[in-house]
Image (tube, rainbow, N blue to C red; front, top):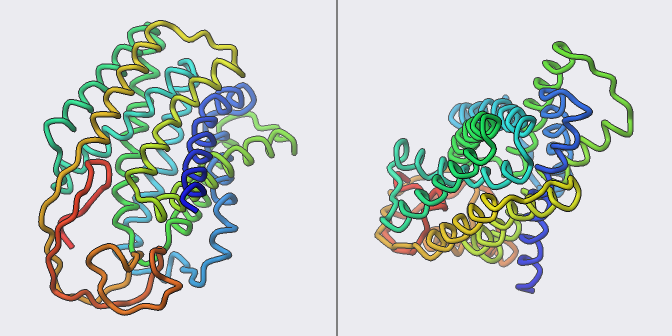
Amino acid sequence: MTKIPIIFALIAAILFGSATPASKFLLDIFGTYQLAGLLYLGASLGVLPFILREKTFSWPWKIDKKTGLLLVGSVVFGGLSGPVLFLFGLRIASAASVSLWLNLELVATALLGIILFRDHLTALGWLSFAIMLAAAILLATGEEQAGLQGGMLVAAACFCWGLDNHFTALITGISPAQTTFWKGLVAGTVNLIIGIATGDFTLSISKGAMAIGLGAFSYGLSVMLYISAAQRIGATRSQIIFSASPFFGVLFSALFLSEIISMLQIVSTMMILVALAFLFFDHHSHIHWHSKNIHNHWHYHDDNHHNHSSDDSSHGVFHTHPHQHRKTTHSHPHWPDQNHRHDH
């Protein structure tokens, strides 16, 4: 059974990695805002089967204020701004380089966690992110002016997605599938309307289906397969597998777009692999304190601090219901990429 979640994580990486070269191809057909809208509408469609399997569904106007504000932030930064900046960068730079630049999302997420959420990063973690940043700069200089402009746009997109990662990590009461659904539906609709209003838009069924299908599989199904794998084999092992997605992007760029992989891209790839190795072997442990409180959020019962009784069907599976934390302390190892909060 452990092979199944590993396969899920690998498929998620392949699907997500394919998005960059496929989007590069579709940019010859659609405007930037148009494609961003269709991709995220597709993502919303891709998670719909998972939502139909859930026992609870929350309309946005019925969720609590905190969750609503976090969801708005996720829509604005993760659904509206991030994909548009990414596609503007992809339009002027090679798909292979953009695939590798997407590793900056991990750097942005960690730095924002340190600045805004008091997250911890060890010396080895700082070293890994410094290597990733150096690799990104090396890639940008290799593509001259287009590389510098494209790299800055993709870096800005990664900053937006880094904020989105923190917002979604703090969302309680609704599932990741519902978060992805509302983000894709709202942001996709708004960007598509902007795209239609600002440019020529002649949508055929076949071309529209290509863009929506890419979003459904690469941004919808991919995310849910990753979450499913993380629930079964842990976030760290899943993230290690999923980190192969940029390299699949490079491979697909060479195979399907006939892009020539340069020596700088090869060197940058090696640097990123070293940085990822440092990052994933870097972990630490310390005490966490949980106050006694009653709340409703997505969790699983064998995570060392949800000690209330449960039936066997919910053991080891993420779910939500109102429950009371006991006042407790515990210690467990975690990694810099896990968005672990210390302010429960």
